[in-house]
Length: 162
Image (cartoon, rainbow, N blue to C red; front, top):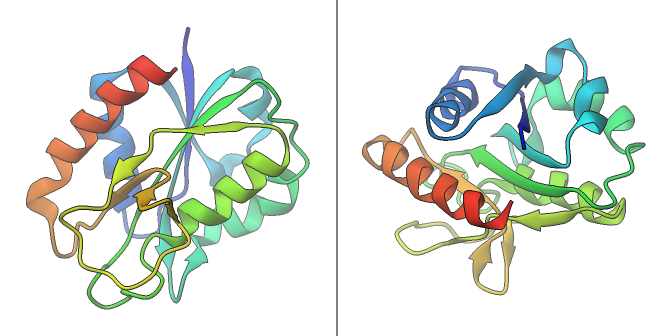
């Protein structure tokens, strides 16, 4: 079973994570700036983004969010990652995970790939549920040395959950 990975990336961090994921699991990669029509082709999805500004979706995702809200995710398992800056934006750290997850769940999808928030230093996040992130949080600004390990560990978890 192949997985569709759809990402938006402003400065390249979310794209870099997509490339790391592709080394660990077979995925078809799409930049959301080119459209999201192919989302419906997959039963398993990985969504990637930056959390921009004060807890907002990255610009490419902003451009497709209305169309994204129209997809039926019933029966689909969806994992989400976001890059962010836990020190400069500690009260909105990786909020984009929560924003995308809300749409997926509202439209019948199941979020997989929860991760521990241990080792992070932030005050609030829309990506938190029951003390865990509902996806993968990456902070290349302050913890770039942990990115590869976090991605590998998350993808191994996804292989079992997909």
